[in-house]
Amino acid sequence: MSGILGVYSVDGKSVADELLLGTVAMQHRGEEGCGISVYRDGGFHTDKDRQLAYYFFRDRTKGLKGLREMAPSAAIGHTLYEDAGGLQPVEQWGEGHTISLAMDGIMLGFGGKNDSVMRTLFSRYLDETNDFYAAVERVMEKLNGRGSYCVASLVRNKDGVSLVAFRDPRGIKPFCLGKGKDGKYVVTSENKALEGVEADFLKDIEPGEVVVVTNGGMDSRVLRQEKHAHCAFEWVYFADPTSTIEGRNVYEARKDLGCRLARRHAERVGDIDLVMASPDSGRGVAIGFQQELSRIRGQMVPYEEVAIKNPGAKRTFQVESEAERRLAANVKFYMNSNLVHGRKVAVGDDSIVRGVVFRDGMIYKLRRAGATKIYPVISCPPLTHACIKDPRSKGFAAYGLGGSVEDIGAAVAKKLNADFVCYPTQEDLVEAIGFDDLCMACMDGKFPVNEEFWK
Image 1 (cartoon, rainbow, N blue to C red):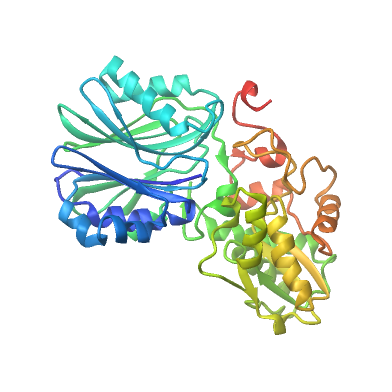
Image 2: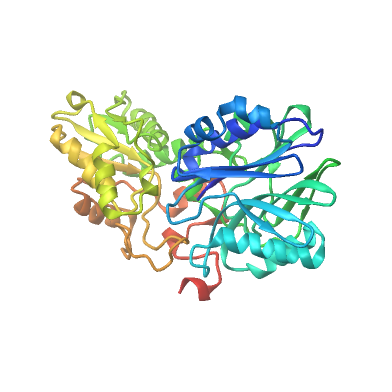
């Protein structure tokens, strides 16, 4: 997972404001570093560093003032998810063209060098075809069955500079198109960034679609389309709650899951005294659970802000090291202990992946604060299989477990020192999101890649 942004002014006006505001808006999609590439004076100025986006712009471009002095008419931005990945954008020189490219994707079989592979292939096929659409179609053919990618690229050739953006034929990760003031087109991972730059949402970029923006305007074509397999984890965790993906708002989907969990598990956890959230992505499910449980009981179940997130803590799903995860668990948030002492608590959270942060952070601190019972209320079904990004991984807390969600909830609770874990079913998740063509490989083992790459 990464956050990407591309912005282009067909009138040649500066896109400095859109670049800064849009890239910062994608911070939640990657905290290991960021970068930008801007078009000015007939060439690219590319810079990147292992900083959060706001501080990157402050230190490397002297903020918005410095960007405005550059007066770029086209630009791309990137926020990096995994430390093992490379900082982007990346550049590639071909015969008669230069490419600067940023991507969000998980492609198997390339040893993590996805951005390098993408820029090399795109440049090679552009040399061979001298046509954006034909080159991207060749890229899609070459990468068939290898996983997900969304790409925002700038291409400079004899005709000037163009913004070329495309999404893999299965549409595994989100990508959308907007239009701002003064004829500026914006492509970005989530429409949250469009809100940040005051651009109007035009559409979700279709699976297998290419969007090309030049000084003559915008054009797009769907080149290759397969059965949609949008990552369900976007609604569960990755995406911002203010974003709407494929027409379904992220917060509303999480809240719907909370309501379904209350109906499914109300009898089992009927003795709780209050509901709280694991901030930040656990709020939607916690609020839905609290509201529906109150309706079922016929009386208000209190919701309290018990866990307060440390503003300097990172999103812990992005922490790869076991030792660092344990440290992150300790510093991620702090407790209003008086609210839970002697009480039975339901804790809303997005998912249980490895369980280390939840066990050593949330549950440990709630036990120390005197909570008598702890019921995790989880918006994602049990992760009984590996993720597409590492199909051979077996480190998930629910990996390999079978039976009902109640059986798995009891088994995982023992691993976490909780009393019971309230999981939704896969059907609950599908109905809450509203699509039956999701990628849920980490839940059902059905990977949207060719078998040779995940076995």
